[in-house]
Amino acid sequence: MKCNQMTLCLFFFIVFALSSVVISEDVHAIAAKTGEVDTQTSLNVRSGPSTSHEVVGSLTPGEQVAYTDNGDGWGELVDGSGYISLHYITNHDGEPVDRSSTKHDSVPLNNERIVLDPGHGGKDSGAVANGLMEKEIVLDIGKRTRDILENAGFSVLMTRDEDVFVSLEERTAMANAWGANQFISIHANGFSNPAANGVETYYFPGSAAGKHMAANVQNQLVEHTDRTDRGIFEESFYVISHTTMPAILVETGFVSNADDASQLADANYRQTVAEAIANSVIDG
Image: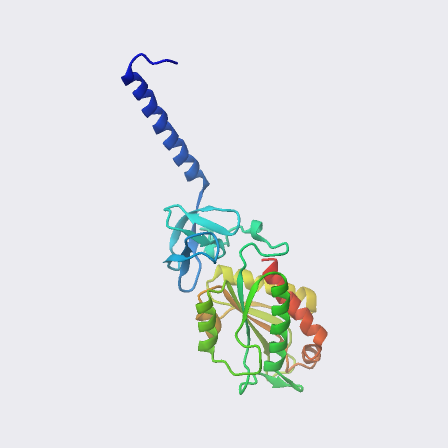
């Protein structure tokens, strides 16, 4: 159409421009989701959708956020301030955000950082019974788990990789400073009643992401080890209450129980436990 008057052409141009803005805003609003920060201290806001990007801000636990889902485990904040990992966001029903698109086939999309924390060590033997020391059992399981996860493309930090004493404060400080995505503390149980047996997993009270992790690893352990399923529980153990990422503590069996102890003494069983822990991370 040819305009004969400049004012008429200008009018149509303004109407077209305003319509484009409204359409764009409507599409953005439809794509936006809301959720709640599920961390124990804070959630980093980054300049891009991966842990390799610069930290440009932070969000507090329980803070409500609006974001668009990138489909790769990361969300872009609607206010334009940066990107957040959706592993630490829950929806308003208290369930973890659907992250099915982030399940790992071979190499993880985000090169996630996993801290493995073999309990005790050095002067602290942990539980001792039936010729076994907890510190030795869990160190071996930790190393085996590390090897599996690294082969799958994960970055893994061990709080200890030899028989040395590491304080609880040092363990959590290492994980927090490294900016880990998950923290898994590995232990073996002991109890005065030798009949007590089986596997169990703990997570920080109220953490939906921690509960999700605990359920995953517990299911894997029960399925692959055929040990008694003692369940998952909320608990404020130091290492899972002073970490800034979702954290769990896994009890892989009782050294004080003859049957569990015979399994824990077997390298094949320890490999199976390591595979169960690693699979719970890989499968998400």
